[in-house]
Image (cartoon, rainbow, N blue to C red):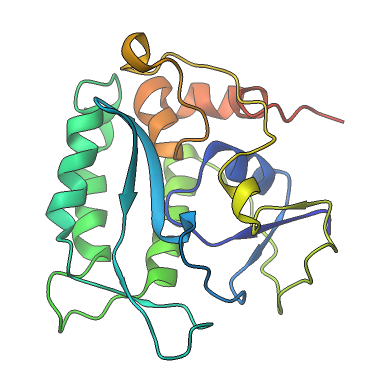
Length: 209
């Protein structure tokens, strides 16, 4: 195993570049607060924006949490629409992605939804949307840190530190310059699945060995 990936919703481009190379996904790791495991980065009209999927923490700090209805799905979806409503491919995905949002996130305290399940739904949606048929190895137990050459479970690596992202034309780039390390939604809405499929390795600085 040369690379390992954490579960997170709508992962970033470099997560996907590694996934397409066969990196293993670790669903057994302890939940880490203040990381992208319940967040996505987007390039919005105010610059870099972090959308957080609120969680209810378990008494067992290591277990993965249940999603909270404290923040309505409509609020986070509105942020996506505000950021990308004018992008070339947003309308193409809008209806089915909004339905995914409504189905995957809780609307009330009695509506029990879990962060891991939400992450898997977004990953499966992205694979289907992009036509990526690869099946990643799912770790039977968490590999120890330091045992893999690339480990996106580390906070800095998951946020894109050390990666050489190549620009593509983001909507608000003229105001804020290019914002690297965004969710794959950013690339999908702007350049579309076919071009993203063709350019993914180049956009993340991951080239054939």
